[in-house]
Length: 189
Image (tube, rainbow, N blue to C red; front, side):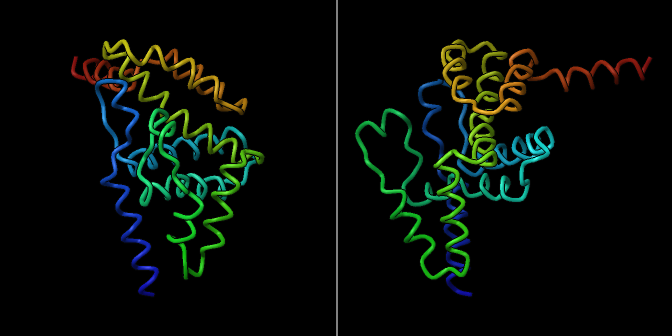
């Protein structure tokens, strides 16, 4: 049990590890754990749009997709040009002596291979989380996100992911709040 407790303490580091891509956007910041929560919410939604997907496997894949970052950090695209992180070694060391180590490794291998529907949906959920952030920043008046959105959309692999990205592009980030505000004004009158 001690080894499992150590693993869980290590996973909690993701709450303190900041995602580094936001340096290029200017505003905004997010921890890896915050990102993972968003990815899981999106994946849960995508599972409803693609009912043939194995929801449990999809959610498990999204939960652990950035787990190695507890050891290697969040390397952005520029950093990856100069730093070679050994994700397989990080995962092997992180999961050593865990009774569910093979489950974690298999999910990460599937995610990285991008061959199954669940892996493609998980990848799309990862990209859609970024698109939601870009759209929110753009709606708030920041110009940099508009440069990145097309590149992120091009990475989408599934029909559900593409369809959802189109809706994200047309929806203002605060429309849900504005609707509540307008409805509450109507109720007061």
